[in-house]
Length: 189
Image (tube, rainbow, N blue to C red; front, side, top):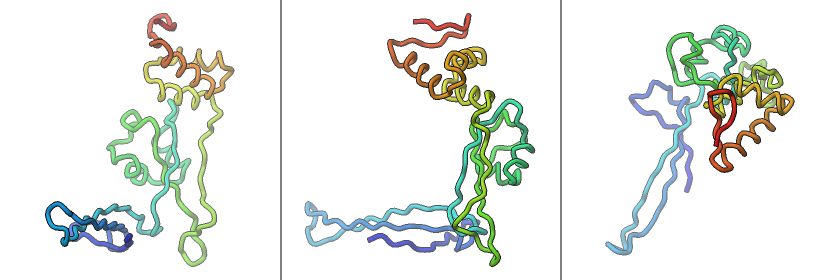
C-alpha cells in the first residue's frame, strides 16, 4: 500500500509542511527461514516543496551564452541570485564560468487574489533558441571536443539548423570511429 504522509525530520531545516515523504511498503514472506513470518520493507522518497508554493519546484533550462551575465539572467527571469544558486547546486560567486553550462531556472506561478498559487497559468520567459549564439553553445555543450570555429562550420553547412548539425555530428562520431580534430578544423579517422 502506498501512503503519502507529511513527515518532519527533527534535524531538517524545512518546516513540516515543506517536506513531503511518500512511503511504500512491500510485504513478502521469507519461506526459507520461516513461512509464518512476514517481512516488511519500507522505502521512502522525499520531495522538497517550496514553502510559499506548497508544491514541487519546477525548472526550465537556460543555456549560458558568452554574453550572459549573472545579474542579466536574474533580471530576465525575475528571480533572485539566491534562487538561481539554490537551483543549480549552490555554487558560490557570480562568475558564470563556475556555473553549469545549462542553468536550471526556477519557474514561479503567479499569485491569485487569495495569495495562493494559481494552477492554471505559469509565467515563464523563454530563451531565444533561434539565435546563432544559442545554437553554437548548445552544439558545443553536446560535443565538448568541438572548438568555436568547428561548431560554427557545422552550423553553417546545415544552414543554421541545430538538429541537422547534431545529427551530422552523431553520425560522424558514431560511424567508424571518426572524431573531430582540433587541428586545421577537419575530421580525422
